[in-house]
Length: 316
View 1 (cartoon, rainbow, N blue to C red):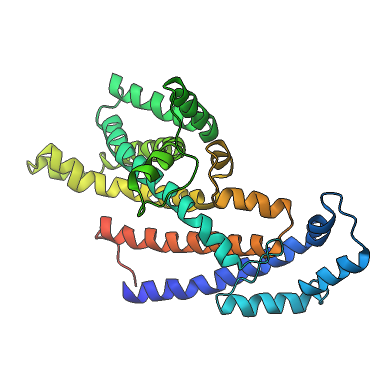
View 2: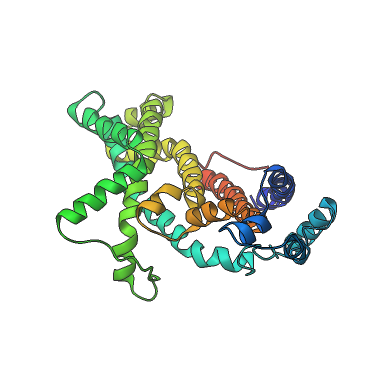
């Protein structure tokens, strides 16, 4: 296991390097100039000389390969550079908003896990009964309703009771009540779809596992049905669901653009929109690298969890 883990960590390095190369050169193909948007975007009367001076200050006058070399050297030192718009370090810009987006993703994952496992299990155990049909309706609704629209329904429901969540973000370690009062609603909005996907995955996997020979053998030996389901069937049925949950969690870090707009949250999603609108290459590059790092790390964690839930898995 240790050898496998080390090899996977080392394999993450060329993956991230490939992402860095792609994002750097693809952004340079996109039309638009951050200096033009910054100085002349609001109709500012700026001379071409001032534009060239700003381009020189940002290092945009250098050849493309020199810019790429500076970017890769900084990346090796965990330095993502400075935002071309705010002139603040990219890491600082990301960390300010990462706490909010990360907490929403964690709360949505907890919400989805607590609901999807019992729902998917009951749907499989009571197949083709009213319980199964009810779970199917709930999960199909989660797959059909966009998260932002469900979020709007939540806000309308809160307005019916003349109450709205606070607008200002409060860290959970400062005031847990104020923090959860604000973030529990967007977490429920995105967690509903998350729950629907996972519950349907657990249901289909559990139905397949319940027909395996080792399940029939356990029953023939007189093992209690509750132990057959929890100890033998469910642990194996959770493997595909773990993969889905890991990918969904990584997606939520930067994929809550519209949901953050609905709930007025200043998270990573909104930062993505702002940086793209401003052609802030350095900030976009930094966020893409952060999300890519999250994806490869979550994939590593998911692969390691396979061995926890299924002892038959051995890594060479």
